[in-house]
Image (tube, rainbow, N blue to C red; front, side):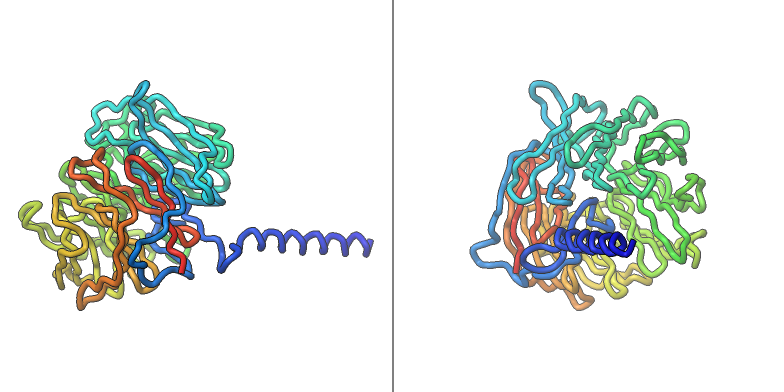
Length: 437
């Protein structure tokens, strides 16, 4: 008996050593995945060391580049694989879910399905990122094709065509919000009829658990915020900023806010018991939550006269960041702005981070005290954002803009940061670029 007990502990210890050896890379530090939209915790924070402090004059080394079709979706990275979606028109319109080897760029698998866009503007491709959870890949297409696949093999585990099943009232630019996947449920904003703007499905089977709100959908992602064990599902639709019970979908609180053209794209940002959101036509809104998050009230709301004469921030795709009591974001024509958190007053504006243009965009990623920008020109920027101003530390180009999404040429897809590399795509290629120290 003692002998077997000793063997048990030897086996357990060996298993732990093997697991640890698989979770630490050969050079330095722990493996850092980017399995979801805006990172592991969907918060736009990059938690990794061993990163360059500034960029070399000759530019960053491209490890590999592989061809992909057009698409707005940002890549996700986990367990040695990179996932992205794209669109093709030949020999017939379809969407694709693609998986590549993280080390080499070799395509591991690809799943394509027929998909004709109906009533959708800006047809360059799927919008939502592929979410990886417990060995499964979840992908939501522009017309509402929802797939759950084996993340390793690409085998389809289940599929639902939400457009027909829920009689979707299609938003102008399609279904866009990346699904929120939790331990048991998957939450989606789909603009379904019959009280199905937001739905929750069993993530293992695809079976509906609940539906909620008769709103039109926006393009913003659902988020769950938690305090003292109290969880609230926050959804920003075309009609409301709402807090729902994650288990039942029952509305806990709703702030009415009709968004022009449904153009609410940024993710809700939680900071110090408040939620901040910003829309292109409709300006900024700060909502104060109660201590248990079960009620909400408007702290302040600001809107300019029009898209050129704006107040606070009129965000297009950019999700603002809040640092030490100040809000930083990109206004409607590319103006980088700093606002006071308590009232939305503008502290400063800077026009050097991205060229001024309608819908000019930068994706923010926080790395320690620095904020990394990926702008629509395909440039990566290391910056420091403070109330005193925008301090640019280093800038380099890592991919060329393409014209499928907008004639002027843009890179609108958000990047992924994993294992001291940045993964970016345009409408022709997916790239892995080293940012190792």
